[in-house]
Image 1 (cartoon, helix red, strand yellow):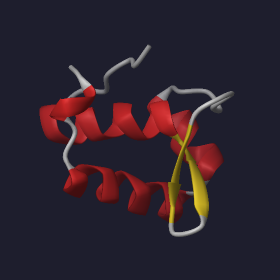
Image 2 (tube, rainbow, N blue to C red):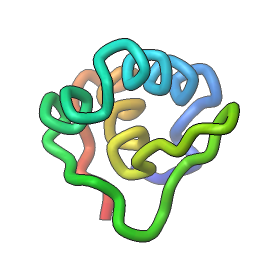
Image 3 (cartoon, rainbow, N blue to C red):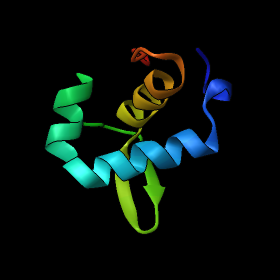
Length: 68
């Protein structure tokens, strides 16, 4: 998986799920920790970038990706 495999639609779906369940539950359910350095900025809010990328891969390909 590369970042080029992630679609805009999938990122928006991941953001919607993050907002729906909250940060703690989103990170718990995806197995990712809190971001330390890199975040996704969308509509004035910060999102954990690796968790969003991993979720989008799982949403599109059926399994979460571990992004390093």
